[in-house]
Length: 289
Image 1 (cartoon, rainbow, N blue to C red):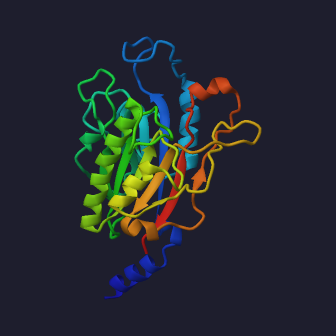
Image 2: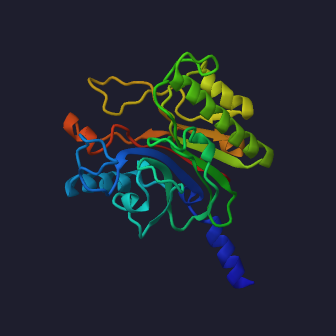
Image 3: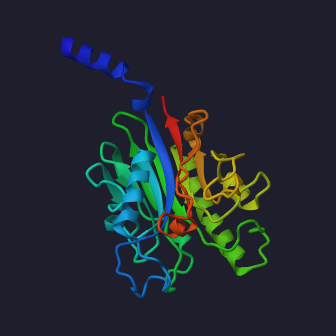
C-alpha cells in the first residue's frame, strides 16, 4: 500500500501545467521536401534554405504545443524538417496532395488515428483537389479523450453567404460546411469533447452564416472570437482571422481563460514571408480537470 500511496500523492502534486494540453494550428505554406522546379510546385515558389528551416524549427520550439494541427504540409518527412521527430509523431491523410492537413503531437500522448474526413475534398479527381480532414483522438494517460480535426478549406469565399451562394467558391464552401456539420453532429451524439482547428479561409463574425451552419449541429466556442490577427501586420494594424480553433462538447468548458495566443514572427522583411509562412501559429490551452 505504501508505494501506491506515494504514487497517488505524486500524481496529486503534479503542477497544473502538466494536466493541461496545449493545442495549436499552423499553416506552414508549401512545406515540402520536393526539389525546386518539381511539376507539383508553383513555378515561382521560392525554395527554403537550411537557414529558413532553422527559423521554422526555432518557432516550433517556441510554440511548444502538445498537438499542432498542420496545413499545407507534404506529409511526415516535411513535418520532420520543422518538428523534432524524437519528440513528435505525425499523421496525414492518405492522399497525394502536396498541401495536406495533418497533425504533429508529443509522443507521450495516447493517440488514435481516425479515418480521414474525405467529404471535405469535394473534387477528389481534380489535379488540384481540395484537402481531406485529418482526424485523431488524443488523451493524456488517464485523461479523457479529445477528438481533433485539422482542416484546410477552399479559398475564395472569405465572407459572402454560403447559404445563398452567388459564386462557385461560396457554393463549394457551403458543401464543406455541410460535411463539417455532419462530423460535428456525430461528435455531439457521442458526447465527446472535440475541436476543429485549421485554415478555414473564412472570416467569422457573430452573423456569419458559415459558422451558423456549424453551430446548428452543436454549440461551438470560437476561441479567437473578438481578436484580430496581428500576423505580418503593418504599422500596428491587424486583420480578421481566417485560421480558427473551434471547441465543442465538454471541451468548451476546458478552455483555460486568457490562454489564446498568436506566435508572431520577429522578422519584418516581407521577403521572408514566403519562406516562413503567411500564417502565424495560433494556440490555446485546455484543462479537462
